[in-house]
Length: 179
Figure 1 (cartoon, one colour):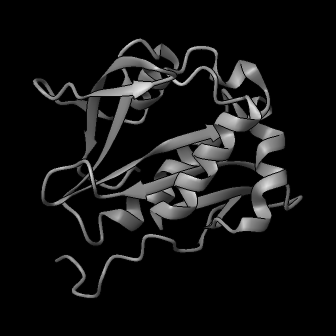
Figure 2 (cartoon, one colour; figure 1 turned 90 degrees about the vertical axis):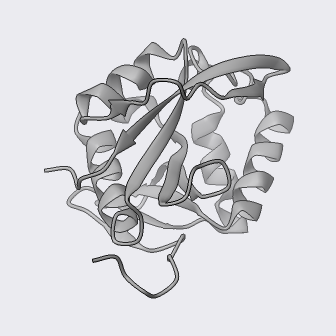
Figure 3 (cartoon, helix red, strand yellow; figure 1 turned 120 degrees about the horizontal axis):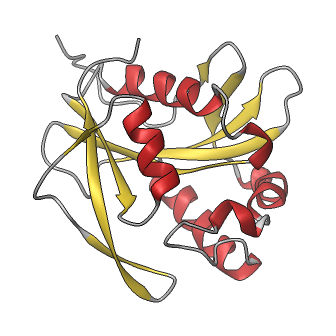
């Protein structure tokens, strides 16, 4: 049974190694320090997001979305990335989880899975599915979605303007909490 209370799009979520909490204006400097690494964005459709003016727009949109979470290493408290919830581009009964990026030192381990596990479990208390829109050519993110059990939704291929270019995306859905 889904919760009757309105969806909390900016919860504080605590895992074994990370904490997620609502993004605040004063997170700008620490988050940009992570995002300023061009290699984070190398295969992402928004490959220019490491540039300060571009990231400022991204950060402003994240603040305005009302669903952005900053990700911190639980042991050190250091900002290591962000992710967000959004229900504007999805079908009824769904919430999008996306815009996720992590410092490269956290790639390849269990961090992304832990973040997604926390966010999906929270979202599925209100929604039937958590969906993820991934740039068609973003092989790293597509593999990450497949690794955690994302179901590729055939026929859903939205196109978004990314770095000034139309960018086809694919959509993955997760309907059960991750185990």
